[in-house]
Image 1: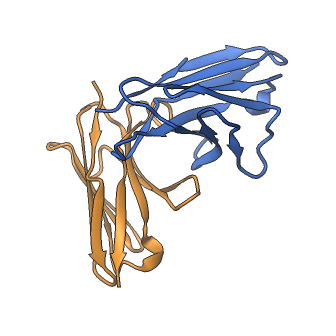
Image 2: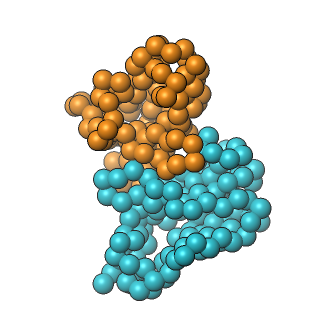
Length: 113
Length: 115
């Protein structure tokens, strides 16, 4: 079956890098996503990576994918207070789009001053 | 771990008909469930917060009379799309947070196609 695991909490100091980790079990995953949820808001798609890629960088965000270990990480450089949110990892086994997404439970990123 | 079952996973209906989507927490009780909608290649948009035993809280711009939400028990919330039109075609997904605060658990989503 499909399962996506991530830690529930991560605490970092402002200005440091945050690394949020995620593991998944379905080797047929084609797309892997990172979503951000701020309090009272819906999920915002931050970035996604195709399963045939190892890394994707977008400004302060770096996604690393280790397909062999089924491990996905999201690195946020120079973490700011505005980055405080819940981050969800999700996988899709269908090509393109969001059909049949499996989400992790979310990692609450806490920023210390 | 906590499991949320969403049914059906896909449905095709004719314009003007109503469609009900169910979201069940299988091994935990959920006083609050969330309904999202996703348009192609866009983020999940929070439609409403479903509260057990009381009225749902709808986000701005979401029509209450069109998207009826019922949360009659601690394990079941339903979303009914009434008088569906092709523009209602979308991917709908529910989410719940269990009592133990062990994070959010999502259903697998429902692909609605209105023809």
